[in-house]
Amino acid sequence: MAGVQASSGQVDFHPSENQLMISQMIKDFGAREMRPKMMEWDESQEFPIDLFHKLGELGLMGVLVPEEYGGAGFGYHEYVTAIAELSRIDGSIGLSMAAHNSLCTGHILSFASEEQKRKYLPKLATGEWIGAWGLTEPNTGSDAGNMKTTAVRDGDHYILNGAKNFITHGRSGNVAVVIARTGVPGDSRGMTSFIIEKGTKGFASGRKENKLGMRASETTELIFTDCRVHKSQMMGSEGEGFVQALKVLDGGRISIAALGLGIAQGAFDAALKYSKERHQFNQPISAFQGISFKLADMATNIEAAKLLVYRAADLKNKGLSVSKESAMAKLFASEVAVKVADDAVQIFGGYGYTKDYPVEKFYRDAKLCTIGEGTSEIQKLVISRSILK
Ligand SMILES: Cc1cc2nc3c(=O)[nH]c(=O)nc-3n(C[C@H](O)[C@H](O)[C@H](O)COP(=O)(O)OP(=O)(O)OC[C@H]3O[C@@H](n4cnc5c(N)ncnc54)[C@H](O)[C@@H]3O)c2cc1C
Image (cartoon, rainbow, N blue to C red; front, side, top):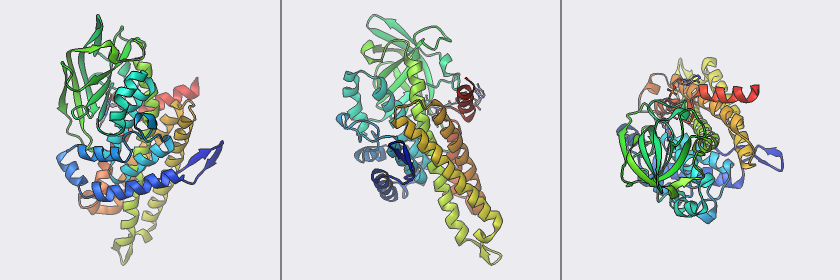
């Protein structure tokens, strides 16, 4: 789904060569590696880890990582195009790719020391390692600043105790960025981020969630029991973790917006095709205004979502503040994904309610977009605070 780009202050609605190349590459890859197996992954909730190693070979596990650290060295336009194209086929793969790139890898890229970057980015950017990012806890989701997981200083180490939940790649991830409390509850400067490798004593994964959708994207608990982490694994200074996390989420929300955009486009593609093939009352159902107007609304909303997503991507590329714009893009594209997937099932009638056609999966997967990386209500909070200040 190559789309809008901008250069020299001019908006260019034509995709760049790189965006077209990425779109075609993912279409080919998806036909070969994803479409034949994705319903099996969905049924069994299998996280297809080998697929992510292959995505790494294509440069899609380090899209934004500079080439000197083993990444593809692209910007947000290419990144959005990649996530949207993957999600147009399978939202689970888009979600995992987004979480790996934006959250774990993105946090290290933005806030790690040079030594930490050299140690971790090449492995993450090539897909040799899978990354996880732990902010959410069982009792603090939207209210993440009130987290209970603690990191207590003990000489050159920190001792972590507590639990994170709903963590993408919590079990298969080779490394996790974890934000824990080092100060007093309620203090936004009282949290610190750490890079913690799988196998560190006292660090384990817990229950794997059995989910409505996004079933091939692994979601688990992370559990810390007297987990000793050397201070060299801290990112930035003590107390900076929560502010870092909010900045990571500003970029991450563009990726969830792209995920919603891709799911909406995938559901629309399927509904459009079916509406021309399915006949009732001796005519294709697309000839009924009730169906063609639905398709018109779906197409219009997808185009509007695309503009918001690529605008946020453009601002991010320019290094400008994107809190409001990424929240707007995420809010709108997520809600469009849910509505378009709903309309697509309706256009398929009874067949849309079965697993013989792709729209029931888009319908289930779409809902995550209005929840992950901040619910729609939290996006409205971010937007309203920004426009009221
Ligand atoms: C598949 C999946 C993958 C995820 N991956 C990760 C991950 O990799 N890392 C990670 O850290 N987290 C991850 N999450 C967690 C996700 O970010 C949280 O689920 C989300 O932020 C919402 O938190 P919550 O589930 O605790 O809901 P709650 O915060 O309990 O919200 C419940 C309801 O209350 C509403 N609400 C809460 N506060 C307000 C308010 N101030 N105003 C109005 N309404 C409000 C919410 O909008 C929602 O409707 C993932 C979640 C899922 C489902």
